[in-house]
Image 1 (cartoon, protein in one colour):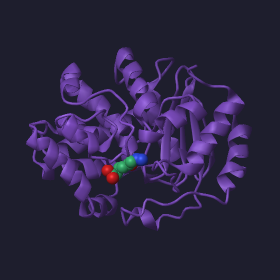
Image 2 (spheres, rainbow, N blue to C red):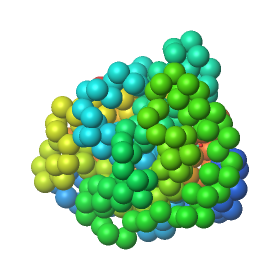
Image 3 (cartoon, protein in one colour):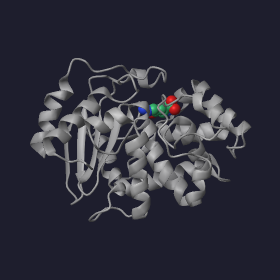
Length: 300
Ligand code: DON
């Protein structure tokens, strides 16, 4: 395993064509596009890494996986009255389908659906309490305490969150948001600004494995369902392409991270800040394609 990760970091990780940084959030546009890291936390408790695997990065939309798990824990199946379970075939921040579908977002990973999940996580709590619960969940999944929110990234995103505010107001007009757009966006921008290293993210991802010594934070059925949604919706309109190339459930973030779950085998995380046209890590996707081709892990 270690040789394979080192080989991927030395080949894919050094590619010249690295994609484009997420410059719509000014703080993210400052990241060195030369970073590359890959980590694997195996179901039997080992951890392997190559590249910059101990440098924290902004997990962005990968946070939607943890928030979904907590929102389901809070309201159970009732969540599915407010958000669907179908791929959208649209960009992560698209508003297109919301009017046709009367304020019910297609799935919990596009931004509109993630705002409903953040609203559910909030309930009647203060944003600070909801974010503390989220950090506690992630820290216990990773078994690591040194995981924090980057306030500069959160406020940079909040300053430029016009489209997310539009999604929130639009859903509220249909009665599909309990809290004010300000509270929901404050929570959402802070969850996106959580920073983790590639190693920490792979370790935290083990909560979605249903084998061995993994942290049992959610039921087996819920793990299966979250994995299914990651497979069908985790890379937005690039989900089909990712499933075709990699064959594993995964969730991306515009910080350039991807968390990938190989059921029964392990959790893999990759990080390279440059993005492809879908807003997912370009080299991260290529690295995962190389990894699964070599190691043979697949749900198919
Ligand atoms: O809502 C946003 O714009 C971001 N904070 C999160 C988007 C994201 O990570 C999309 N993923 N590839």
